[in-house]
Amino acid sequence: MVAAESAARASVRAGSARRAAILLGVALAACASFGRPDRNAEIPPALADLARAGFSFDADVRFVHDPMTVCDGLTCADLVLIDERRTIRLANGAFESPSRLRATLLEIWPRYALPRHSDVPDLTRAALLVVTDGARAGVRDPEVMSSARFYYRQLWNQIPPASRANLPAPDALPALAR
Image (cartoon, rainbow, N blue to C red):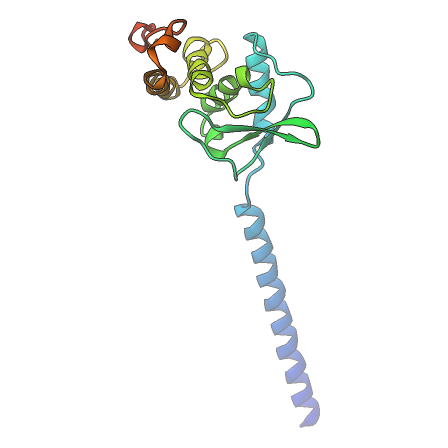
């Protein structure tokens, strides 16, 4: 009887260990499947498109996907200094589509030379750059181009009239190509 009980207990322990191993395997697979995707591989092709259009970043600038960075209108990137190196952190929203990523990079291009907070005229000029040169830099999504035009209008309206002299009125921009 004792040997039979001992064998039964060993069988139960082995079954419990197998179930625990299976559950652990399922949990690890779920973590791998549902983990945060690495979007950094999408950045080099977008940079290449911008470079072909004449918008190159300096070689020392680092680009990283940062889920903690947030979009504010058209702006989906932050420029920071990390270990004395310029780093452009790209928000999740920048990766909504290839066009959105290119628009985000093009929007920050005129402002990346010096890490500082931009003022409304700088942001307006950056939105205008996306509107005027976005298609040439690979921004193909009409919704992204429409958003750029919308934010340009919003920012342009915030600038004092005297500061608008070198910026086209939103209504004077060429129509979107469909």
